[in-house]
Length: 89
Image (cartoon, rainbow, N blue to C red; front, side):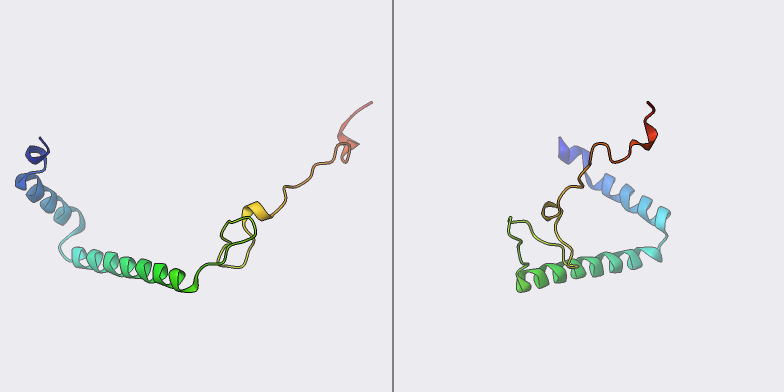
């Protein structure tokens, strides 16, 4: 069933649509950008594996920019009666 849907005729139509939408000159540029993005992603994965990202005390991984993970920061406290200026007697 899928072979009937994704046959060679659909592939030809898809290629023609891509060429019409993006233009012939833009397709190599798009392919280059996709390739470089893939390479950067794989390079980042490799760097992270080499460094061995440090984990915090509760097991969550801290952000690479030095900020604490969300689980490490306490929730803001709310005090009852701190702002009584809005209530009327």
